[in-house]
Each structure stands twice: as structure tokens, then as C-alpha cells.
Image (tube, rainbow, N blue to C red; front, top):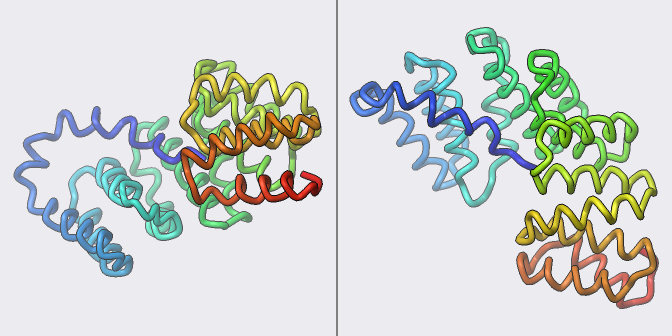
Length: 254
């Protein structure tokens, strides 16, 4: 899952706010909140972040700064980030630029999925795409979430294909399409897409695991094990890879 998309516009937005950022006392609240995050005091961090957002003169930038603070933590506190950001949804219209508002909803959808809020992510992704029908990040993340949940797979397929039609050089998007095809049982087609994905982004344990899973379904056990070893070299504790390797080495079905 890809959760950095909303940060793409932060640098642009802050470029014109350099003086404000350097001089603003609100930044002290932000920095104190980050310190609380680093100490995993999530409640304390949220209290400081709320003060920061409420006092900051640039609502959109403030939310993005807080999102970045959460996502830069090694622990990736997805649930805490979601719980913080979703409380500002009633104020979403204050994000004046429509594509930025779509980006906010895309982030809510992604974080809802990663937080296990399976009944909520579709609403946010639909809002994102209603605001920005060309938001390929929302299309991709929505498709991946549906594939992981094994539901609405034909819709997931269309979303993934649309994302690639807009942005064809993203390995992550090819991975999503391949994973949707895998879930649909279209293994040869999945293999083609996942090979492209791994060639584009060879340092992802998830992508290596997905390719291994397809090889396993096609009866290509040795190829699957090679990809699993590569996945585990990249991320030694990668649980899906460990599980599939145990199944293959034990002679079980994948």
C-alpha cells in the first residue's frame, strides 16, 4: 500500500510560506507533537497537533505537515494518523483546491484500509474520485484494498487499469493490477504484470512475494522459492513470504 501521495504537494505549498514557517510560534507545537510521536505518546501528540492545526493560518498545509509527521515515524502509526485526520473531515471544504481535497480523501481511504477499518475506506476513495476523476493514486490504492479483501474484483480491475492508463511507468501500479488478476485466478496475465512490476521496483518485498505467489499457483515451485528468498533478503520478517515458503517447502498447497 502506498501512503505518501498527499505529501507530493507539501513542498510546493510550503515554498511560498517559508517566512511564516520560520517565524511562526505554531511550529513549536508541531515540533513538540513530533517529539511525543517519537516517544509513542500518541494521545499527547494528537493534543499538540490539534492545537497546531487550529492555530495555523494555512489549514491544508497544517494537515499535510501532521500527516507527514506520522508517516515519517519508523513504527508507521497508521491507526493513529487516521484517527487524527478523519476528525477534520467536517472541515474538508476548507481545503480550497479541489485536487488537494481529493488527495485528503485518498489519504483517508488508504489509512482506513491500513488501520483495518474495512467498512470505511470505500467511502473516502469514492469521494476522492468524485472530486478528481484523474486521481490515479486513489484508483490504485482503492483497487489494491479491494483485491486484498477479495471483493468487487471486477471493479478493482477497472480501477487498476485506469490508474495504469494515466501513469503507466509506476511499478506499484503494475503490482496492483497483477495482484487483482491473481485474485481473479488469471495467473498468466498476473505473471506478466508482476514481472514488469518487479523489474520496475526490484527492492520491494511485497512485490517479490506477489510474484512468488503467482509462480506457486502456476506450479513453478523453484521460481517461487527464488522470489521468496529475495523478498526475505529485503525484509527478513516478511510474514506472507515466510508463510508461503513454509507451505512450499512442506509440500502444502499455496
